[in-house]
Amino acid sequence: MQSAEQRAFLAAALAWTRRPEERHAARMLHSPFSGVPQELGAAHAALAAREGRLLDRIAEERLLAPFGTALAELSKFTDESAARQEILRRFQLDDTLPGASAAPHGGRFALCEPATPEPRKGMRATRPRFSASQLNAYVECPRKWFYRYLCGAVEDKGSSASFYGTAFHAALENLHSEFPRPGDADPAQLSLKLEGLINSAFDRHRNDFGTPVEYELQRRRAQRTAKKYVEWLLAEAKRASFTVVGCELSAELEMEGYEFIGYIDRLDRDDKTGAVAVIDYKTGTIATSAAEYREKIRQFKDFQLPFYYWARTAQGDRVWKLALLPLKDALLDVAPIVLEVVPVPSQIGRSASATGVIPLSELERARERMIELCAELTSGETTAFGVTADPSACTYCAYKIACAHRPYPEDQRFGR
Ligand code: SF4
Image 1 (cartoon, helix red, strand yellow):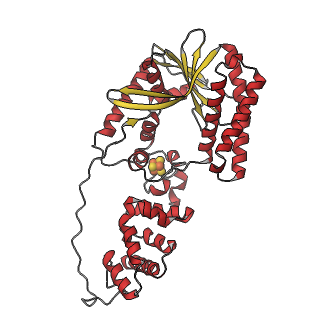
Image 2: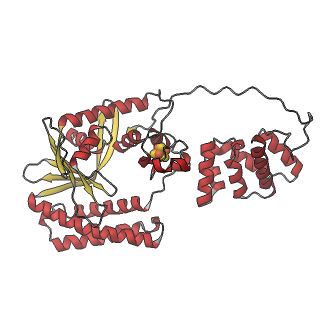
Image 3: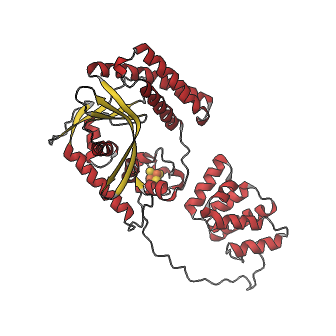
């Protein structure tokens, strides 16, 4: 097996010296003989097959530097036999390979001692600030956290779904800065305004969508959802008038020496009681009931709204409501998942209702867990970041192509 792989590598490297084209470099990168860690090499080769620019990528990527230097040096050779010698030397190939240079020791080779693996060293978070979404990523899949926050391994270029969310958030931010008291606004004017804001926000991201058709489909979806949003907003304002006191509000908090930052999509103040409600817009899939969302908080799978609760409480607000506002499905009415904060313990019901309660003690547990996770991530004692056991976490993971150990869905395991 070794010799076949080595022969393939040698052939690719010789082809590169004759004609330095990306396809030859990609074949070399795929091989374990390239000296590039296999997962990294395979990831870059796969990206190159999809997007090209392999040589630019090699030039930019520090981890690939020795390989990049070797490519540059080899491309200068004009004499094939000298190039062959250099390839054998640089990549420590077995020079008794058929087709390699004549072996000085008559085809025999000596086995060397296996290299001693380096002792594992702990890794720690180096970013000065944490966010709830960072901790959410860690509890969902430690390996994903490692890729995203520790090595920045592969750039996440975004997707239609993420640009849909960005544009929709921007349109709503502009709407509420102009109409902070939706109950006082003329419904037709509100609707018309949001329609225009959606169009201009999507227009700014026009080139981010994969195709013009995709752009148009997402823009129309947003327009239909926006209509439902305005209907819901007016009904809410009629039920109990409120003022939108901020959108995309920076939420900063220090907890036991760990600094956190986040952005609250919308903060409403009840006109009668002065209590505030934290609203988080969701353009992806969310829990379908308040009980389900509360359970996620209890199981420490979601820290976003607990974090906002503590950040605003530290600012002196009385937070009475935490809500997830779904903006994904244009065919459904906008119906937020709402948790009212209560001071006393309360059982989780099994109801499918969109509204429920969350006791303060559960928000406190979430806060404690966040601090524990920060301590774990900064301890420097973690030497390996395991993969998730839940294959659904991998579906849209940007690091999928680099992640050889990801779990496969039950029905695909035999196809690996
Ligand atoms: S592909 Fe799956 S296992 Fe791998 S990093 Fe992403 S979420 Fe984790």
